[in-house]
Amino acid sequence: MRAVVMQHEEHEGPGLLGPALEAAGFTLVKRFRAVKREDLNAELVVVLGGPMGVYEADRHPFLGEELALVSERLALGLPVLGLCLGAQLLAAAAGSEVFVGKNGLEVGVAPVRWTKEGLADPVLAGVRPRGTVAHWHQDTFKAVPGATLLASTDRYTQQAFRLGDSYGFQFHLELTADELDRWFTQGAEELVELYEKDIDELRSQLPKLRSAEAENRELLERLAHHFARVARAAK
Image (cartoon, rainbow, N blue to C red; front, side, top):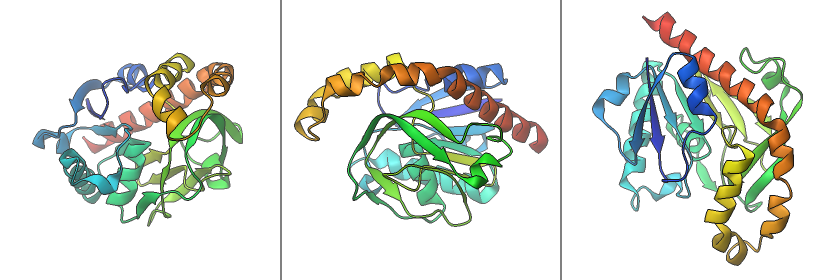
């Protein structure tokens, strides 16, 4: 089984998701800002995050190609997993509007609340009502037509959704504390100068994410097995 992974930044890989997919039987096929025609028929397409916005396809033509791919897969009933920018692309492909959120940048380690529907979701069922995850986004989107809202935060309502067999997560379930720390180092100048964030304060949150890694890894493993079941059922 192929899991095509759309990556947009060199330092932003699949993290904990990669081993979870491989353990479920997937072979990872990585794409960097590129789409190939055979990706349409892959058992799974994963779209990772990135600093660009869905609405910036004129500056980043690969976004238009990815949006077309995700739209076509949704029309065919083929699964997609979107993380951060990937969730926004999945939302846009389903007919939602993606835009810069009015509540500012959501970055760091913070809780996410699973909705009643999220707690009853066949993949998520059994998770604690609140999870601890990594956040790094400012864009958000309107309610996704036909989707089930799975999670929210105080800052932004649209944090996770299920659409058929596809899932979108605005936050970064795939990130370990060490990886998020590297992101802080990579983006320190932007965080301080553009958003007036305190890097030391952000780093002080990392132990919370480290404590949540086992729980987040288990959730990613559940997602991976879900997509494996979908692929087997389609054969």
